[in-house]
Length: 432
Image (tube, rainbow, N blue to C red; front, side, top):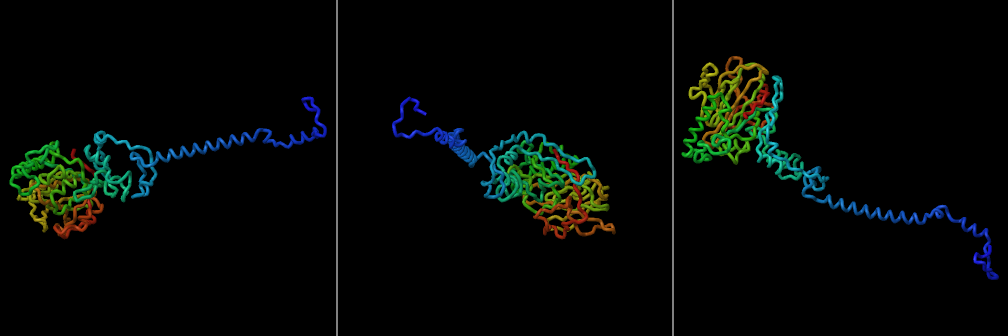
């Protein structure tokens, strides 16, 4: 074909044939004819941008997960590995302790055959709730440290670490006789009463004389009104309740009682009582009697009848040891002890297996100093007399606290296992 501009090619210049031009065009691939080179470049550019964006996002998320003082970890792995545990950005919102402290519902069982009872929920002060929720012991998060519980990481308790098992009772027990601690030296608002005395923490101080007289009068009124908690309505009461599986408190400083109930900072160790009350089921049909002693006093009421009054002070039977609720029975029998006072025996009691009976035990300390409370039982033998050996009065078969597993030298020859004679706590009633 001649040139489009009409010029004649120079002589000797080869002119490609039409067939050669068409062959050259036919060698272009289908991808090239679709413009593939441009598409490839575009894809490479987009891939680079995506990689850059992904690196930026990953870097941002990593920075935000790094240690945040307000985030909490799962605590999995325990101990020092807590920092490596999976963390969540959820922030723990503090709860209002006042709303938690109101109107704790009482849980009771109406079944006379129930084998397990739930105690009333103890009243908790706002201060103790704050300590438990906000303090949480020394661990980080839930289950950190060497333990696995919530709080101190020692597995002993929660919150303020007072959930231990003492000889005065336990806050974590399911069965037992609920006990309430009262301090007569102050009213329910925590203000001192005339029973405070001049030196309530000093045993034998003369300035405490009038205060002791007033205290004895108040305790007498409490007993005369049938162990009525209504007479204690204006007396300071510890907010926590302890469930006792037994009353076996060897000689110890009187400070141990307020300490066990968590009020050792508020209460001096004198002129207090601990009132345990509930109901139990008899383990067998037969006869038994309570044997024990208290410093300064211990009173037991079985089925609303005074069944033991023993100790340095005897508010209910006096020096004559006459039990009016048992036909004015005079009970002078004792068992030896090394506590300073003999273990006095009460009247014989007839029981029927699995019969539910209300029970109350009151222990108290007057001038301060040393305290103890030992409560045992003696079973009647076929000859109508006591077997001679004493058994620990137990209300569950749960393991005894370490301090009394093997008994105590002050009251030798006590069967601490009491196999076959373990009473069963079936209903808990707490003074309110």
